[in-house]
Length: 292
Image 1 (cartoon, one colour):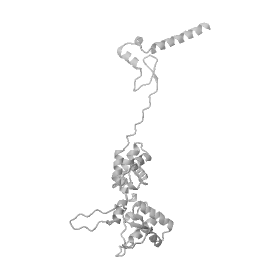
Image 2 (cartoon, helix red, strand yellow):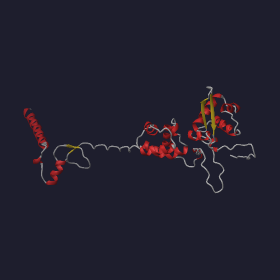
Image 3 (tube, rainbow, N blue to C red):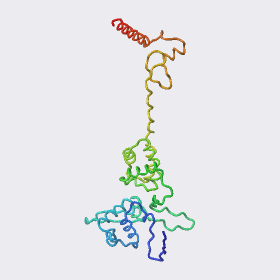
């Protein structure tokens, strides 16, 4: 595909490719966010007015706003004034922000790093960059890791304290997959990761990793070998045995063969009982022949 693009000399907005290619943002959400980012500082235009000017219908606007809130690009706070009137304050960012980071920006923090002085380290930017999508990943994830990533996304989706960036999910996917290999269910994972969370979580990825490692279930037990079938003892005692390995005679017959002794020391009486049974059968057969 051919492409021709001329960089604008002015009146343009820098939008990260991660927003334009975001796998979970709809077209309406991307348009709403980029339109907001293009507004001059201090414009004060609310999202609803932006949606109206951008031609986004009400239903699409509600869905788009919900997506932006879930991904951390939009934050808002409602409070009641002295006269009882409620007001809403909104924050829009070009990088995903956690609730703590958003409150820091609201209260005077900077969403991006300031221009550093030559020779001095630059301060850390507030927020986290959105990771590349699978479309831009040079090597697809291993199926087992992909299964772990899906499970981790599922169990943490509804817990805002454990909001994980895509890079965190990919990094923690092998540990999560190990849980599944050991027989854990999604309910087990959810209980281990989301129960008894502290009031404030400073590092969702760090807490998740700690719980995945510390609460890792024991390995699943291996398959129990099937017992061998019963077979007649080859030592002549008439018993049925179930071999443990490759033995063909019972323990008593093996001992007799090893010591050169035989059934006179039969403690269990099994051999004597077998002989009496055979003798009884012979007598019955003999009696039947004589009668006829």
